Image (cartoon, rainbow, N blue to C red; front, top):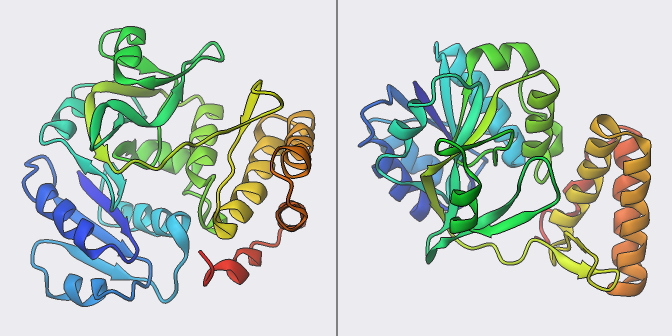
Length: 297
């Protein structure tokens, strides 16, 4: 069993996480993929005993980090890999509880707000309907035998088997951020993988704010981010995910939703232009456009 951590310029959080992981008896190794951090992470990894670090030549985002980290873990003989970002902190018994579920291919914990553990950081859309839950109590009520089948929130403390990776491949490194995790879950689902969230295994995570801005008179939401970088990647990658896994009608509906949002909900010709450029880039297979926003956040 090998843990893979992807990090970028969050050395303080990484130290805390590695200290926690070194106390997990089920782990044979901890591998850290550093996305070319500039805060001393590479030097700290080189000097740290008990953890293996690999610093990339340039920042490839979470997508490159998990692609390379998962590949590295399999090269080192892992049959099961525990994947996580540097800003989550698994509860001490999290991995042991996950391992009790031996009939799954891709499964993980709930990600709860470190400051308010009764709330989820990443809301869950319950399988078989449109209901989205934000409260821990709602998830617990919806669970069967301590888990919810058919849903998982990658890559925040999730387990993936070697067999599944060999069947579906590695995460899409070119996605950079935003949508790479969702694409991997969709790919696993399409391959018939057994997927679940174990509700009494938990990872503590800083709050990320609201992930959906109301639009169309409150009938739906849109994933608006103040970051041009995040928005560009979301628009590009989400369109491609919808086209690949849901079909063109869903993809075109997302285009229309984006146009509506930046025309009526939050009028911004500039942001609409970024959106359309991102979508065009994705459709023609250009995954370099996000680089123009790297210094802007």
